[in-house]
Amino acid sequence: MFTPRISQLLALGLLLLLPGGCNTTKGSLRSELERADDRQAGRLTVRRDQGEQRRPSVTKSPSITPAGITQTIHRRPEWGARPHKASRVNVVGGRWEKITVHHSDEVGATVFNGSFSQSAHAVRSIQRYHLDVNGWGDIGYHFLIDARGRIFEGRELTWQGAHAGNSQKNRRNIGICLLGDFNHGAPSTAACAALEGLLDDLRRENSIPLGKVLLHSDLSNTECPGKHLSAWVKSYRGS
Image 1 (spheres, rainbow, N blue to C red):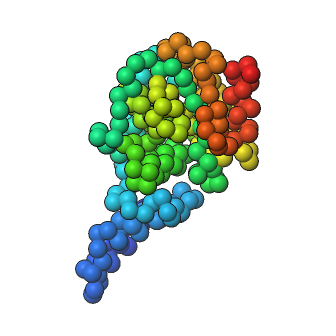
Image 2 (image 1 turned 120 degrees about the horizontal axis):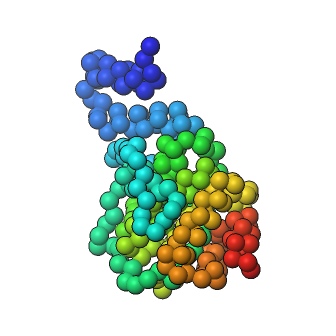
Image 3 (image 1 turned 120 degrees about the vertical axis):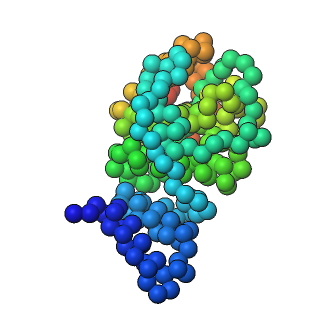
């Protein structure tokens, strides 16, 4: 028996052999495969997949933990990150001084099935939006956490982030984003545990005090990271 994916490939391959089939472009074949993949995962993206030339491959290589981090971090090649644009990123230029917590919001309405593949797809969608729509040098956040507590490496810690509002607010400020909309629901226990462990590691490694663990709303006029995640962060820092 062929798998659904193989069946899709065979069907599309036969199309090229039919009269007029050579008029079907490689791009349209790729687009159809992308839509089939999204339907199989339970999500058909529209706006955020427009203009993507190819679905990035997701490697299943063992995770590598950055220095000073005890949590398992899924590095950029694992989720299929695009390269950063060197002309649009700035070296952090000193020790990290604060951490800002966000929620993704834009993917919050999606019902995820909990798979690594689907979370990686969400992270790619955020990176694509930040690169292609916002015109940034990379995904804005340094880390992203899904509902299963997986931690994804976003922008490398070599670079100043793009998440807090402007260059001054982003200066020496690590951005962490939880996938979801936490105005309308609470983050999962697994996500909170991963966030707590990551905050503890980053604070210890960079001598960041509890009072410098911030909400995005502490810096900008926004509801981010949502009332439920905001309550958790305030409890974490004892405020």
